[in-house]
Amino acid sequence: MTDSAPVRLVAAVASDEDAAVTMAQGRSRPAWAEIDLGAVAHNAAVLARLAGPAELCAVVKAHGYGHGGPAVARAALAGGAGRLAVALVDEGVELREHGVTAPVLLLSECDPAAAATALSYGLTPTVYTGEGLAAFRAAAAAAGRPVAVHVKVDTGMHRVGAAPADLPAVAAAVEAEPLLRLEGVWTHLPVADGERAEDRVYTEGQLDLFDRLVADLADAGIRPPLRHAANTAGAIAFPRARLDLVRCGLGLYGYLPGPAVAEAFVAQAGGEGLRPAMALKARVVAVRTLAAGERPSYGRLRPLPTRSLVATVPIGYADGVPRTLFEGGYEVLIGGVRRALAGAVTMDQLVVDCGDDDSVRPGDEVVLLGRQGDEVITADDWAAMVGTISYEVVCGVGPRMPRIVVNRPDAPGA
Ligand SMILES: Cc1ncc(COP(=O)(O)O)c(C=O)c1O
Image 1: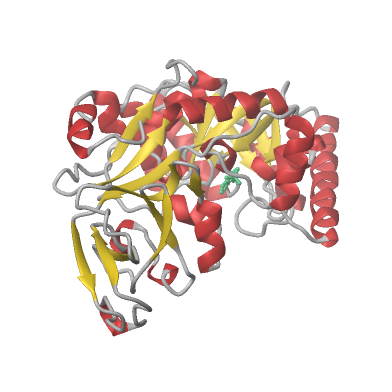
Image 2: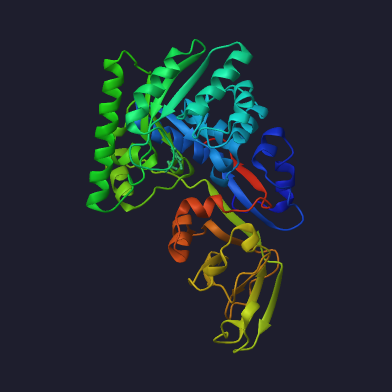
């Protein structure tokens, strides 16, 4: 699989399902992202087992965190997810248009103008304002059929959601609507992955508040079947947060949000690891031998320490490779060997210092993210170098990179 060439990739994007994972055809240059759908299914199965009996909701917004929304959704469902979540109505529509029939939760209240579209595609709205409620009341009446609704309460993320004091009224207003059914009540945890003691205290406080709010609803005779609070970090590091459903994104793609969560995961998963689902690859398109002191690429930032073979690779910051990786000391893999960049990452290309190794040739595979031989570069490695998080690395892989499926959920080893 690691040797897959662009030529094979053209064949691989021929089917409908592959079209769902391909955000650009991008066949005119040898640079691509490999998407291991078997890994997504495996990760979903691990998370579902760990969080059970809570149901796994696979968060596939932002094109499945850059992996390709519909294909990832299908793989997660094959692995044991029972439902899906997206941020935008458009993302839910894309899933439906690719034949995904599982329940799809909208994680934010959508623009009222999009309510009818959301319902016509069978998406499950989240509401928390009077305006949102009115939009879905009207859309349900126009459609003439019952609609399941989730209400979000803001217990401490302070982004969107009903204020805790308003939750009883919003929930009661949903219940009072003949065509709306209160299927869920939920909240979100901003520091479940936190390293500081105060983060843990904050998250416990949010969960205490949420439990109290749910108990108050029950006292008022309102018992939504799905109470949910946990993202990947919450599902792993706070077992009490699993409730009826966990909303996992990052874990599905094979990463964990920080060392505290990783530690909690190892303690619970019984040696069953998560597998990164994305690799980023290209092929060398040119090589040149330059004298010591030459300074390749924009800005002529650094002199080559010795006479070196410099390889040009056709992928750049327009594809999601941060320009600042050069300053961070980033390396790529060629021939199973780590090699430093020779200069600044440009929009479409980067240059690699291969030193005195003159065996590197045009056509050689370059791994920017993933495994080659015994070496591995992860999204966490990139993130540490440029001061971001693995989420941003995988979501940042640009739309002109073809996404190529390298392993399907039903394949051996999936
Ligand atoms: C409301 C909500 N729930 C769940 C998730 C999934 O989070 P994670 O990727 O950390 O599992 C997100 C992601 O941002 C989110 O916004």
